Amino acid sequence: MQYHVINAFGNPVRLRLLCCLAKGQKNVQDLIENCGLAQSAVSQHLTKLKQAGLVTSKKDGKFVYYNLTHHKAAKLAHELELFEKDVTKKEVKKNK
Image 1 (cartoon, rainbow, N blue to C red):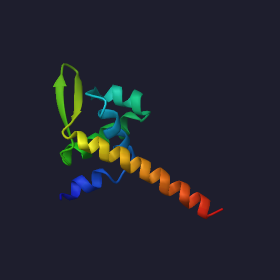
Image 2 (cartoon, helix red, strand yellow):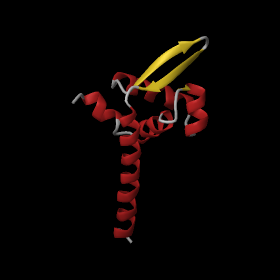
Image 3 (cartoon, helix red, strand yellow):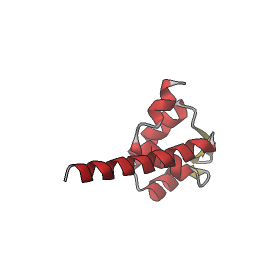
Image 4 (cartoon, helix red, strand yellow):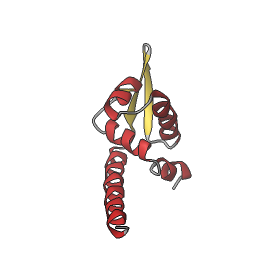
């Protein structure tokens, strides 16, 4: 397994982007609005996701559109987000 693929799933912003792209093709502005992220964060993390081979991009006029290369990536990202929330809840309860 490539390091870039594992690394891509190790960041909550990239997980959120993968989940947003599960709903279909989006451009950077769509991702900023739908995911509640800053433009610089979206661009940097999309680059990492492209390097990992998890998203592709297509330029159309002045916009660049992003798509998932594997829909399983979005499912895995969603499961990781849920798992992180579960672990966090247990840590909070444990520390009380």
